[in-house]
Every structure is written in structure tokens, then in C-alpha cells.
Image (cartoon, rainbow, N blue to C red; front, side, top):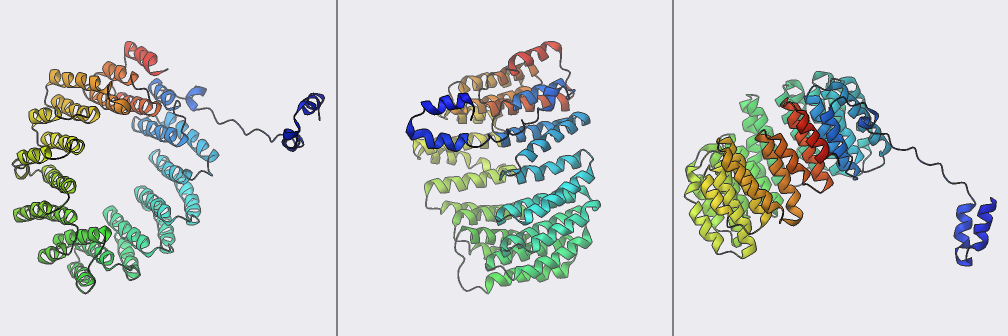
Length: 508
């Protein structure tokens, strides 16, 4: 022990001597190597816009969130053709992930990162990393995580084209040894659809057989029926009418031969999906019979509405609304009715919805204040979806919550800009900023949305000024990253005055 340490030792109280002896009796462990410096700090990033976005991202202390921002900026660099900057960012992110390989989140991040190599044209590196990931994922204990990671690998391999087919087949072999039969079969069925959409017909046929070999191991007849109906749809798309009919009838048989009624929301959802698939396959009457087995009226109503849209059947629309009206809970009933309204509006069936809006307004008036505010916000959004900006703004004026009202006003501002009404758009944005300042924790989210509309208006200076008001580091960095993406992808020239403004307001 060194003399200075002896002097400290003699001055210590007896109660702490054992702890001191434990720590002083061994050499201090070597310090971990410092984390790699981000490439912009080493002068390796040529784009000054990217540099600003990266500086903002580095203010975020949470490593996964910071990495997600870097991934977004990397995507911007790739899309803007800044290949060298993108490669340096990718190398840095790989270094950071290697240092945190023991963290649970690292598998998801590092698997997704392989897509970036593919986007930059480095198929060989992407394939090497995916092969390594596959071996690691096989040993994970959490089956749900394994499913999600397998889905990611399959999707990346399909994006890579035929060169990735051997790895794709190895991945499917790994899927086949999953212990949960439901997750395994769902993953096989989803992959079959992806294979077909990509044009891998022979592999699609092989996967169909593999999927069929696993369906019998699923306990739930309702889930079996849903899988059979999806298989039937694929055969139908392959123009194999005989097989399509065979598996559609198998789906029907699984349901009709079951004596116990379906129980639970999961079974209800599977029945709804099966009914929709059967309708597309031309089994309309059977599909309707199956919907009658769905015990949850809100799920039955939404199923009927989607079937009505798919078949252009007005009588099914009436039936969907009648079913929704039978929901006993006022909140659940209103939620379902609005869901039907939005489904129809987004399908272009505005005429089926407009006559409902006065009724919705009257129903909202009868609800408790907190619930009424939420549904008033939905009504304002519905008016906007239908193109009725005046009534949307009037309805928004009745919303008490500052964030909910501002969210509608920002959407209205964008709508008015699209309709070439810039003065109205500007007034709505100013009102939204005023609301943001009294919106508490939602303040930064509103300012993010306002800055996004200013980008749409091509008013870079106002977007920068708005972004500078955002206080929370992640929201600030995300808005900055979006601003840089806009500048680079639209090739908007950045004059020195605006760049100085960005340096002053964003680099802080």
C-alpha cells in the first residue's frame, strides 16, 4: 500500500475498514475503452446539414433512442446520394452496437441495421451479418422476440432478391423448429404471402405445403380456419381455383364442426378475418353466417363494415351500424360508430357518412366532459377527412384540451396550404403555437407538427425558428432530423442566412 493510502487507512473509522481493505487489496480494473467519437466530430461528414442533425441527435442520452435518430439520418444520407457520409455513419453505428451487444435491445437494432448495408449496395456484408444474426436468434428464449426477428430477417432477405434465397431457406428451417405451433404457423403463412408477392413461385408452393403440415398442431379451430382461409387466398391469386375452393371449404368446416362456441376477443378477431377472406373468395353467404358467431358486437360491426367496403354492398353497411348501435357501453358504442365512419370515409364513401355527423354531435353532448372532448376531436378529424374544413374548425373550437385542439388545427393548416390558402394556413399555425405554449408536456409535440407544416410550406426559416422552441432533446433532435431530410431530399438550397440561423438556434 502506498504511503498516502496508509495515511487514509489510519484515519478511517473501524466500521468502514473491511470495505476499504477489500477495495485496496486489489488493483483497480482497467478502464473500459472510451466510446468511439461520432464521425462528425472527427471531420468525416462532408454535409453540413447532416452535421447539424447529428449534433442534435448526440444530445439524446438514451442510447437506443440516439441510435434510432442516427438510423433516420443515415436513411436521409442514403436517399440523398451522400454515400461516403452514409458509410461512415453506418460504420459508427456498428461500432456502438458492438459495444452494447449484451443489451437486450441490441438484437433488434443490429438486425435492422443489416438493411442499411443492403441499401448502400453492400449485399455481401448484409448477408454475412444476417447469417451471424440467425445463429444468435436461434438461441433466444423469448419466442415472440424470435418471431419478430425472424420476420425482419425474412423481409430483408426478400428485399435482397435471389442471391439471398439460400439464407432465406435457412431462416425458414429455423422457423420450423419454433416450439409454439401458433406463432410458427402464422409466421409461415405470412412468409408465404411475401414469397408470392415477390414472385418466388416455386418457394411459395413449398412454403404452402410446409404451412399446411403445421396447421393441425394449432389447438384453436378458429385460428386453424383463419390460416386455411389465407392459404386459399394465395391459391386463388395463383389462379389455382381447385385448391382455393378446397381450403376455403376446410376453413368453413373447422368452424361449423366445432360444437363449443368461440370465446374471447382473440377467437372473435380470427372469425372476423376468416369471414373477410371467405367473402373475397366468393363464399359470401358462409362469411355472413360466420360473422353471426362473433360475440363481441364491436368486432362484428367492424367486420361487417370491411366486408361491405370489399363487396360494395350497401345493405351490409346498414347491418354494421345496426350492430354497433346494440353495444351496451356508451363509450364503446361511440368508439365503434366512429370507427365505422372513418372506415367508410377513408374508402371514399363520404355520402354514407355525412348524414351521421349531426347525430354524432348530439350523442357527444350526452357524454361526460372528459369523454366528450375525446370524441369531439374525432368528429373534427372526421369532418376534415370528408373535406369539410369549416365544420372541422368549428368543432375543434369546442375541444377543451389544448393538445387535441392544436393537433386538429395543424392538420387544418396543412389542408389549407394544399388548397392554396396560405394566409388561412398561417393563421392556424400561429394559433397552434399559442396553444402549444399552454399545453404542458404536449407542447413539444405540437411544435414538431407545426415545424413539419412549415417545411411543407417551404418556409425553412419559420421551421427552424419553431424547432428552436422545442425543449425535450429527443423531440428537438427528431424535428431537426426531419428538417435536414427535407432540405436534402428536396434539394432546397440553404442560403447562408438560414444556415447561420440553424447554427444559432439548433446548435446549442
